[in-house]
Length: 112
Length: 110
Image (cartoon, rainbow over all chains, first blue to last red; front, side, top):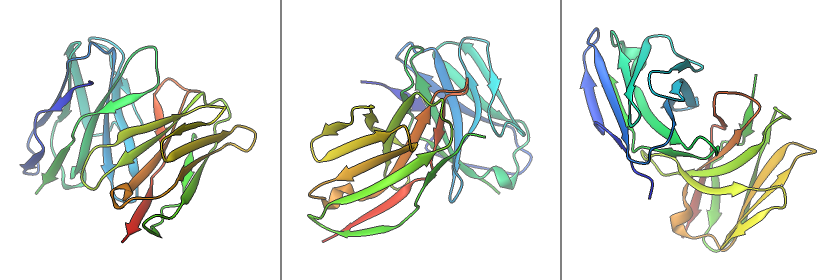
């Protein structure tokens, strides 16, 4: 069974705070992704990574950065949180030889 | 720009009925196709992959029409537990993974 965990289910932060969202997998999959999901906008890709220390921008990378120091962990960083970053954040992983993605339970972030 | 379009619904369907919905995709180079199910405030979960020959999993049937670039999902004998949002997902033709539709909201009524 695919296991993807995210550090928090719910998080409340203040404007200007630095926020770390962690995603950990135990499947040894190469590819990891960060999305945000907002009503009416669907899932939008923020960043992805195909290997350790490797990162690629998705469709909406502005205001975010990522870190992948170990294969099993992919972190999303909000350098200075803003209210428009209030959203559901979903981490996903994908084996290198398939297109199927498996999602973590999500972190619902509120920025006040 | 790659696009996946779905009717957002909601589709209100009585329990036991058959319901079908489609999605269209714009990128003719797409290689893989999926339906995901998402319950309220939960993560998307893979429902089924969609193959060129069509595939069936119990009450669920998925079809792919490459010529017209659409994918369909048919649910027979619908149950209350089928109430969810169904996401159409397309892959391939690019290096950045999947393209998601915004979802079709299905409500099964007793």
